[in-house]
Image (tube, helix red, strand yellow):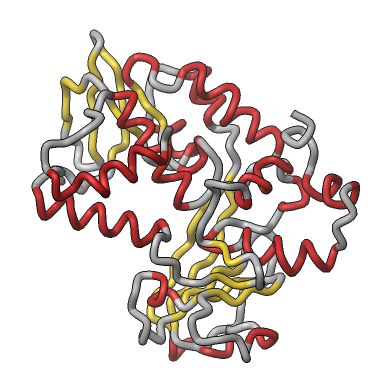
Length: 303
């Protein structure tokens, strides 16, 4: 409880960690895969330490301020699971339009798409979406929506490009398998390598978070730009997500998912989605022996 309620900056000073160590080994790793380092000092110590605990992130290569492509990494697990489900028919994709309203009536849920189409009669709904979006589209639950909306988000600019000048100079001599280069104002990653395209020269830069300036990227080498939002756990956010939301998560058949339910990052996002599926009532085993290994790995993440 002490670590849950203590800001990380205070805990690090009390435990004797230098600012240089925190910047080199904590800021760089907690920036990986679009998890913000902005506001890290105010985040709960426990939320930060969870990423380094046994069973935490395996995207981290903590011996250096960089990340390697791990065979068991979340991006590889999830892409393998999706490929397997589509191949075996264990999943069906029915709708691709945005859902703008979720309403319960007479014990069942109805969904309304952005095209005005209504889908009715659902016993359970899993909202694998950001907390701020979930709080806006669920109707008839003002108090619960207000609680869910307490999880805060930060917008960031994300640019897909081929401008090598964005790579942090201190890591120019790093080995070729390094994925991310991090410095205080931005993060640039060799995005293709994360997904197994080892020869890809595509770079993804996350910059312009909060009061940070935007990275200067050669416009001739830019392929696409987006504005993304990602949350960060202050102590208040953590108490709401870990202690309050579980009181009503799953109530009436409405299940919240997304990384914000358990923490932050890819593993927590997968874990919360599988946990929601388990609450809905998926079987502990499946008949297709070809998929048993992947299926059991997924179930193990939410136990």
